[in-house]
Length: 367
Ligand SMILES: [Mg+2]
Image (tube, rainbow, N blue to C red; front, top):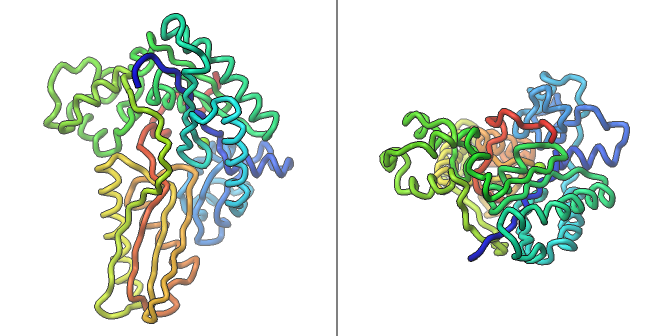
Protein backbone atom coordinates (compact mmCIF):
# COMPACT_ATOMS: atom_id res chain seq x y z
CA UNK A 1 0.00 0.00 0.00
CA UNK A 2 1.55 3.26 -1.05
CA UNK A 3 1.37 6.54 0.84
CA UNK A 4 1.26 7.39 4.53
CA UNK A 5 -1.04 5.26 6.64
CA UNK A 6 -2.59 5.33 10.09
CA UNK A 7 -2.99 2.03 11.93
CA UNK A 8 -4.50 1.14 15.32
CA UNK A 9 -3.67 -1.97 17.28
CA UNK A 10 -6.36 -2.74 19.81
CA UNK A 11 -5.82 -5.26 22.57
CA UNK A 12 -8.32 -6.04 25.32
CA UNK A 13 -6.78 -5.98 28.79
CA UNK A 14 -6.60 -9.40 30.51
CA UNK A 15 -9.59 -10.33 28.40
CA UNK A 16 -10.96 -13.57 29.87
CA UNK A 17 -10.39 -12.46 33.46
CA UNK A 18 -11.90 -9.02 32.80
CA UNK A 19 -15.06 -10.59 31.39
CA UNK A 20 -15.33 -12.66 34.58
CA UNK A 21 -14.77 -9.60 36.77
CA UNK A 22 -17.36 -7.63 34.81
CA UNK A 23 -19.95 -10.37 35.25
CA UNK A 24 -19.12 -10.99 38.92
CA UNK A 25 -18.61 -7.59 40.58
CA UNK A 26 -17.50 -9.25 43.83
CA UNK A 27 -14.38 -10.45 41.96
CA UNK A 28 -13.28 -6.95 40.92
CA UNK A 29 -9.96 -5.98 42.43
CA UNK A 30 -9.24 -9.60 43.30
CA UNK A 31 -6.75 -11.95 41.63
CA UNK A 32 -8.87 -13.91 39.16
CA UNK A 33 -7.26 -16.96 37.56
CA UNK A 34 -9.15 -18.51 34.65
CA UNK A 35 -8.39 -22.19 34.01
CA UNK A 36 -8.10 -25.33 36.10
CA UNK A 37 -8.69 -25.51 39.83
CA UNK A 38 -5.54 -25.19 41.98
CA UNK A 39 -5.79 -28.72 43.32
CA UNK A 40 -6.33 -30.16 39.83
CA UNK A 41 -3.85 -31.03 37.13
CA UNK A 42 -5.21 -28.11 35.10
CA UNK A 43 -3.47 -25.15 33.52
CA UNK A 44 -3.96 -21.40 33.72
CA UNK A 45 -5.62 -19.96 30.59
CA UNK A 46 -5.60 -16.33 31.70
CA UNK A 47 -4.90 -14.21 34.76
CA UNK A 48 -6.21 -10.81 35.87
CA UNK A 49 -3.70 -8.03 36.51
CA UNK A 50 -4.14 -8.59 40.24
CA UNK A 51 -3.12 -12.23 39.76
CA UNK A 52 -0.19 -11.35 37.49
CA UNK A 53 1.27 -9.38 40.38
CA UNK A 54 1.70 -12.71 42.17
CA UNK A 55 3.61 -14.07 39.18
CA UNK A 56 0.68 -16.05 37.77
CA UNK A 57 0.92 -16.45 33.97
CA UNK A 58 -1.05 -18.27 31.30
CA UNK A 59 0.03 -21.83 30.40
CA UNK A 60 1.33 -22.30 33.96
CA UNK A 61 0.13 -25.40 35.84
CA UNK A 62 -2.82 -24.47 38.10
CA UNK A 63 -1.02 -26.08 41.05
CA UNK A 64 1.80 -23.57 40.67
CA UNK A 65 -0.70 -20.71 40.40
CA UNK A 66 -2.38 -21.93 43.59
CA UNK A 67 0.98 -21.90 45.36
CA UNK A 68 1.90 -18.40 44.12
CA UNK A 69 -1.52 -16.95 44.82
CA UNK A 70 -3.40 -18.89 47.52
CA UNK A 71 -6.14 -16.24 47.76
CA UNK A 72 -6.76 -16.40 44.01
CA UNK A 73 -10.28 -16.73 42.67
CA UNK A 74 -10.02 -19.76 40.39
CA UNK A 75 -12.62 -19.77 37.63
CA UNK A 76 -13.35 -22.29 34.90
CA UNK A 77 -13.11 -20.74 31.43
CA UNK A 78 -16.36 -19.93 29.61
CA UNK A 79 -15.05 -19.97 26.06
CA UNK A 80 -18.47 -19.50 24.46
CA UNK A 81 -19.00 -16.33 26.51
CA UNK A 82 -15.55 -14.98 25.49
CA UNK A 83 -16.21 -15.75 21.83
CA UNK A 84 -19.58 -13.98 21.90
CA UNK A 85 -17.99 -11.02 23.69
CA UNK A 86 -15.24 -10.92 21.08
CA UNK A 87 -17.79 -10.85 18.25
CA UNK A 88 -19.67 -8.00 19.93
CA UNK A 89 -16.48 -5.98 20.37
CA UNK A 90 -15.36 -6.51 16.76
CA UNK A 91 -18.81 -5.46 15.57
CA UNK A 92 -18.53 -2.31 17.64
CA UNK A 93 -15.06 -1.59 16.24
CA UNK A 94 -16.31 -2.02 12.67
CA UNK A 95 -18.73 0.79 13.42
CA UNK A 96 -15.66 3.03 13.53
CA UNK A 97 -13.22 1.50 11.07
CA UNK A 98 -15.60 -0.10 8.59
CA UNK A 99 -14.33 -3.30 7.04
CA UNK A 100 -10.65 -2.38 7.49
CA UNK A 101 -10.35 -4.58 10.58
CA UNK A 102 -7.95 -7.51 10.81
CA UNK A 103 -8.87 -9.63 13.78
CA UNK A 104 -5.70 -11.29 15.04
CA UNK A 105 -7.14 -13.24 17.94
CA UNK A 106 -10.16 -13.32 20.21
CA UNK A 107 -9.18 -10.02 21.82
CA UNK A 108 -6.84 -8.31 19.40
CA UNK A 109 -7.25 -6.48 16.09
CA UNK A 110 -5.56 -4.10 13.69
CA UNK A 111 -7.65 -1.26 12.27
CA UNK A 112 -6.64 0.84 9.32
CA UNK A 113 -8.12 4.33 9.60
CA UNK A 114 -6.12 6.06 6.87
CA UNK A 115 -9.22 6.87 4.84
CA UNK A 116 -11.17 8.17 7.82
CA UNK A 117 -8.49 10.69 8.74
CA UNK A 118 -7.78 11.78 5.17
CA UNK A 119 -4.45 12.47 3.54
CA UNK A 120 -4.07 16.21 4.15
CA UNK A 121 -1.03 17.55 5.96
CA UNK A 122 2.04 15.56 6.84
CA UNK A 123 2.09 12.00 8.13
CA UNK A 124 2.40 13.10 11.78
CA UNK A 125 -0.61 15.34 11.36
CA UNK A 126 -2.66 12.44 9.98
CA UNK A 127 -1.72 10.31 12.98
CA UNK A 128 -2.65 13.11 15.41
CA UNK A 129 -6.03 13.51 13.73
CA UNK A 130 -6.77 9.82 14.43
CA UNK A 131 -6.28 10.06 18.20
CA UNK A 132 -9.84 11.23 19.02
CA UNK A 133 -11.14 8.20 17.15
CA UNK A 134 -8.98 5.88 19.26
CA UNK A 135 -10.33 7.60 22.38
CA UNK A 136 -13.89 7.18 21.11
CA UNK A 137 -13.37 3.45 20.49
CA UNK A 138 -11.99 2.93 24.00
CA UNK A 139 -14.91 4.86 25.47
CA UNK A 140 -17.46 2.88 23.44
CA UNK A 141 -15.95 -0.47 24.49
CA UNK A 142 -16.01 0.69 28.12
CA UNK A 143 -19.57 2.03 27.93
CA UNK A 144 -21.21 -0.68 25.84
CA UNK A 145 -19.24 -3.77 26.84
CA UNK A 146 -18.01 -2.80 30.31
CA UNK A 147 -14.42 -3.67 29.42
CA UNK A 148 -11.09 -1.89 29.09
CA UNK A 149 -9.19 -1.86 25.81
CA UNK A 150 -5.69 -0.63 25.09
CA UNK A 151 -4.95 1.01 21.74
CA UNK A 152 -1.66 1.77 20.06
CA UNK A 153 -1.66 4.29 17.21
CA UNK A 154 1.13 4.40 14.65
CA UNK A 155 2.17 4.74 11.02
CA UNK A 156 2.15 0.94 10.51
CA UNK A 157 1.33 -2.40 12.13
CA UNK A 158 4.71 -2.83 13.75
CA UNK A 159 4.68 0.47 15.62
CA UNK A 160 0.96 0.30 16.49
CA UNK A 161 1.40 -3.14 18.02
CA UNK A 162 4.45 -2.18 20.05
CA UNK A 163 2.70 1.03 21.13
CA UNK A 164 -0.27 -0.92 22.51
CA UNK A 165 2.01 -3.40 24.28
CA UNK A 166 3.92 -0.55 25.91
CA UNK A 167 1.30 0.88 28.20
CA UNK A 168 -1.36 -1.40 29.63
CA UNK A 169 -3.98 -1.64 30.92
CA UNK A 170 -6.35 1.01 29.61
CA UNK A 171 -3.54 2.56 27.58
CA UNK A 172 -3.50 4.84 24.58
CA UNK A 173 -0.05 5.28 23.12
CA UNK A 174 0.63 7.26 19.99
CA UNK A 175 3.78 6.86 17.90
CA UNK A 176 4.35 9.51 15.27
CA UNK A 177 6.09 8.84 11.98
CA UNK A 178 8.82 11.31 12.97
CA UNK A 179 9.28 9.68 16.38
CA UNK A 180 9.12 5.99 15.55
CA UNK A 181 12.86 5.22 15.46
CA UNK A 182 13.42 7.02 18.78
CA UNK A 183 10.42 5.26 20.33
CA UNK A 184 11.85 1.86 19.45
CA UNK A 185 15.45 2.54 20.51
CA UNK A 186 15.29 1.61 24.22
CA UNK A 187 13.21 -1.54 23.68
CA UNK A 188 14.71 -5.03 23.85
CA UNK A 189 15.47 -6.60 20.46
CA UNK A 190 12.70 -9.13 21.14
CA UNK A 191 10.13 -6.35 20.78
CA UNK A 192 10.53 -6.43 17.02
CA UNK A 193 8.05 -8.36 14.93
CA UNK A 194 9.46 -11.79 14.24
CA UNK A 195 12.31 -11.79 16.74
CA UNK A 196 11.70 -14.95 18.73
CA UNK A 197 13.89 -16.48 21.38
CA UNK A 198 16.29 -18.04 18.87
CA UNK A 199 16.93 -14.83 16.93
CA UNK A 200 17.13 -12.84 20.15
CA UNK A 201 19.84 -15.17 21.43
CA UNK A 202 21.74 -14.90 18.13
CA UNK A 203 21.55 -11.11 18.28
CA UNK A 204 22.72 -11.12 21.89
CA UNK A 205 25.78 -13.17 20.84
CA UNK A 206 26.58 -10.35 18.41
CA UNK A 207 26.22 -7.88 21.29
CA UNK A 208 22.85 -6.51 20.19
CA UNK A 209 20.31 -6.50 22.99
CA UNK A 210 18.23 -3.41 22.27
CA UNK A 211 16.53 -2.13 19.14
CA UNK A 212 18.92 0.83 19.34
CA UNK A 213 21.87 -1.58 19.14
CA UNK A 214 20.42 -2.91 15.87
CA UNK A 215 19.88 0.62 14.56
CA UNK A 216 23.52 1.51 15.30
CA UNK A 217 25.05 -1.70 14.03
CA UNK A 218 27.12 -1.06 10.90
CA UNK A 219 28.17 -4.67 10.33
CA UNK A 220 26.39 -7.10 8.09
CA UNK A 221 24.95 -9.63 10.51
CA UNK A 222 23.80 -12.14 7.94
CA UNK A 223 26.05 -14.67 9.66
CA UNK A 224 23.94 -14.35 12.82
CA UNK A 225 20.39 -13.92 11.56
CA UNK A 226 20.55 -14.98 7.90
CA UNK A 227 19.01 -13.22 4.94
CA UNK A 228 16.47 -11.68 7.26
CA UNK A 229 19.05 -9.13 8.45
CA UNK A 230 18.04 -6.40 5.99
CA UNK A 231 14.38 -6.61 6.92
CA UNK A 232 15.25 -6.70 10.62
CA UNK A 233 17.25 -3.50 10.30
CA UNK A 234 14.40 -1.78 8.49
CA UNK A 235 12.00 -2.84 11.22
CA UNK A 236 14.39 -1.60 13.91
CA UNK A 237 13.87 1.86 12.40
CA UNK A 238 10.09 1.33 12.47
CA UNK A 239 9.70 0.63 8.74
CA UNK A 240 6.90 -1.81 7.97
CA UNK A 241 4.62 -1.89 4.93
CA UNK A 242 2.63 -5.04 5.66
CA UNK A 243 -1.00 -4.51 4.67
CA UNK A 244 -3.85 -5.67 6.87
CA UNK A 245 -4.51 -9.34 6.30
CA UNK A 246 -8.17 -10.14 5.76
CA UNK A 247 -7.73 -13.77 4.80
CA UNK A 248 -9.25 -15.90 7.49
CA UNK A 249 -7.87 -19.22 6.34
CA UNK A 250 -7.14 -21.34 9.38
CA UNK A 251 -3.47 -22.11 9.53
CA UNK A 252 -2.05 -24.80 11.72
CA UNK A 253 1.08 -26.79 12.39
CA UNK A 254 0.83 -30.41 13.45
CA UNK A 255 2.72 -33.61 13.85
CA UNK A 256 1.44 -37.16 14.35
CA UNK A 257 2.62 -40.73 14.61
CA UNK A 258 0.90 -44.00 13.84
CA UNK A 259 2.15 -46.92 15.91
CA UNK A 260 3.11 -50.24 14.37
CA UNK A 261 1.28 -51.76 17.30
CA UNK A 262 -1.47 -50.03 19.34
CA UNK A 263 -0.18 -48.83 22.67
CA UNK A 264 -1.37 -47.39 25.99
CA UNK A 265 2.16 -47.24 27.41
CA UNK A 266 2.42 -43.84 29.10
CA UNK A 267 6.18 -43.58 28.66
CA UNK A 268 5.96 -44.30 24.94
CA UNK A 269 3.12 -41.83 24.48
CA UNK A 270 4.85 -39.10 26.47
CA UNK A 271 8.06 -39.62 24.51
CA UNK A 272 6.06 -39.28 21.34
CA UNK A 273 4.32 -36.10 22.48
CA UNK A 274 7.64 -34.61 23.53
CA UNK A 275 9.14 -35.18 20.09
CA UNK A 276 6.07 -33.83 18.36
CA UNK A 277 6.04 -30.76 20.60
CA UNK A 278 9.68 -30.13 19.76
CA UNK A 279 9.07 -30.52 16.05
CA UNK A 280 6.14 -28.09 16.20
CA UNK A 281 8.05 -25.56 18.29
CA UNK A 282 10.91 -25.74 15.78
CA UNK A 283 8.54 -25.06 12.89
CA UNK A 284 6.86 -22.19 14.76
CA UNK A 285 10.23 -20.62 15.52
CA UNK A 286 11.43 -20.93 11.94
CA UNK A 287 8.32 -19.11 10.75
CA UNK A 288 8.49 -16.71 13.69
CA UNK A 289 5.01 -17.73 14.84
CA UNK A 290 3.35 -18.49 18.13
CA UNK A 291 0.06 -20.32 18.76
CA UNK A 292 -2.85 -19.80 21.12
CA UNK A 293 -4.47 -23.23 20.74
CA UNK A 294 -2.94 -26.65 21.36
CA UNK A 295 -4.78 -29.72 20.16
CA UNK A 296 -4.20 -33.42 20.66
CA UNK A 297 -5.55 -36.10 18.39
CA UNK A 298 -5.89 -39.78 19.18
CA UNK A 299 -7.10 -42.70 17.12
CA UNK A 300 -8.10 -46.06 18.56
CA UNK A 301 -7.93 -49.58 17.13
CA UNK A 302 -11.42 -49.23 15.67
CA UNK A 303 -10.38 -45.96 13.91
CA UNK A 304 -12.48 -43.79 16.20
CA UNK A 305 -10.64 -40.47 16.17
CA UNK A 306 -10.93 -37.82 18.86
CA UNK A 307 -9.43 -34.36 19.15
CA UNK A 308 -9.37 -32.17 22.24
CA UNK A 309 -8.01 -28.66 22.47
CA UNK A 310 -7.23 -25.88 24.88
CA UNK A 311 -6.69 -22.18 24.15
CA UNK A 312 -4.54 -19.70 26.03
CA UNK A 313 -5.07 -15.98 26.10
CA UNK A 314 -1.44 -15.42 25.18
CA UNK A 315 0.31 -17.22 22.37
CA UNK A 316 3.05 -19.72 23.17
CA UNK A 317 5.90 -20.96 21.03
CA UNK A 318 8.03 -23.23 23.20
CA UNK A 319 8.17 -27.01 23.14
CA UNK A 320 7.84 -27.34 26.93
CA UNK A 321 4.46 -25.55 27.03
CA UNK A 322 3.11 -27.42 24.01
CA UNK A 323 4.21 -30.70 25.58
CA UNK A 324 2.76 -29.87 28.98
CA UNK A 325 -0.58 -28.82 27.53
CA UNK A 326 -0.85 -31.93 25.34
CA UNK A 327 -0.14 -34.21 28.31
CA UNK A 328 -2.73 -32.31 30.27
CA UNK A 329 -5.31 -32.73 27.49
CA UNK A 330 -4.68 -36.48 27.36
CA UNK A 331 -5.16 -36.82 31.12
CA UNK A 332 -8.02 -34.41 31.46
CA UNK A 333 -10.11 -36.16 28.80
CA UNK A 334 -8.93 -39.66 29.72
CA UNK A 335 -7.95 -40.27 26.13
CA UNK A 336 -5.69 -43.23 26.93
CA UNK A 337 -8.46 -45.36 28.43
CA UNK A 338 -7.61 -47.88 25.69
CA UNK A 339 -4.62 -48.44 23.40
CA UNK A 340 -3.92 -45.87 20.72
CA UNK A 341 -3.24 -46.48 17.09
CA UNK A 342 -2.22 -42.86 16.50
CA UNK A 343 -1.28 -39.86 18.56
CA UNK A 344 -0.72 -36.32 17.33
CA UNK A 345 -0.30 -32.74 18.47
CA UNK A 346 -1.29 -29.64 16.55
CA UNK A 347 -1.37 -25.92 17.15
CA UNK A 348 -3.72 -23.34 15.64
CA UNK A 349 -4.54 -19.71 16.22
CA UNK A 350 -1.14 -18.77 14.85
CA UNK A 351 0.22 -15.29 15.03
CA UNK A 352 3.50 -13.58 14.48
CA UNK A 353 5.81 -13.47 17.44
CA UNK A 354 6.05 -9.85 18.45
CA UNK A 355 6.33 -8.31 21.84
CA UNK A 356 7.25 -10.77 24.51
CA UNK A 357 5.61 -8.96 27.33
CA UNK A 358 7.83 -10.27 30.08
CA UNK A 359 10.91 -8.56 28.64
CA UNK A 360 9.33 -5.15 28.42
CA UNK A 361 10.39 -3.15 31.49
CA UNK A 362 7.56 -0.63 31.54
CA UNK A 363 4.75 -3.07 30.96
CA UNK A 364 1.63 -2.41 33.01
CA UNK A 365 2.34 1.21 33.73
CA UNK A 366 -0.38 3.65 32.83
CA UNK A 367 -0.06 6.52 30.52
MG1 LIG B 1 -5.16 -8.98 25.49
